[in-house]
Image 1 (cartoon, rainbow, N blue to C red):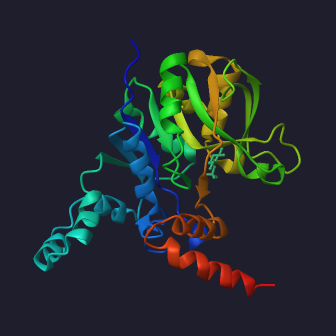
Image 2 (image 1 turned 45 degrees about the vertical axis):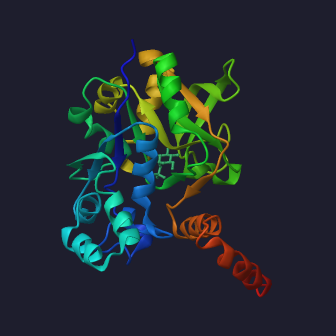
Length: 296
Ligand code: G1P
């Protein structure tokens, strides 16, 4: 019987240089998306899919992440004394959301290197990896579908999404062949951030993976690739090419994804999420319409 997957790994050691100076003394994962730090959306997504054991790969300057998922006794008792139960429940929500674990990456040498830091914690079980720059709308299903596919195929599963070909140099790009399921493809090749105009498809890896533990052995022998970093995509390419541990399949996601990885996409993500909120949308929508009419 397949082991039930319970572990999620969230790499969060990046320096966030695209958001300087905001990220000088604060991790980029704590940047608010409306009123919640980006990282909390990702942990909530993992928990919603049943992954309650969360390992965060952090680095220097990341104490705020640990604090966010822990009690904040002074703040909690102040809110309690004021009888502000609404805010108190918002503060307390992230305390016990998941069983949180942390390991530091030391030298950030790429996403593959970050995932390798999870080896001891994960052991010999399949596990999920969620990248914090990609937020998946909680009304659309992705991770639980990937977990089902992993159980069914006992292979490695990655999330793919069709992107504008002009953007393909910003992603890992997959070449695929169809399966008998229209939402699932068999991966025949992967290239990390191909040079502009050279991508072999418009199917991009988005930051959700359900990996088999064999990935660790492959990562250990993966040489630095794009940008001099150990790339997870390169290790997955080897698994796909040599059909290691059942090969690699992709679940094609057609739902709503918000990118918070750079400043422009981050602003768009906040606006998109805020207009849908019951507490902010009704006031924000007409204001946005008026404001956009003033733009030429
Ligand atoms: C990483 C992966 C890339 C993937 C992307 C998705 O890149 O290396 O293959 O397409 O996440 O967001 P990053 O954006 O962290 O440079």
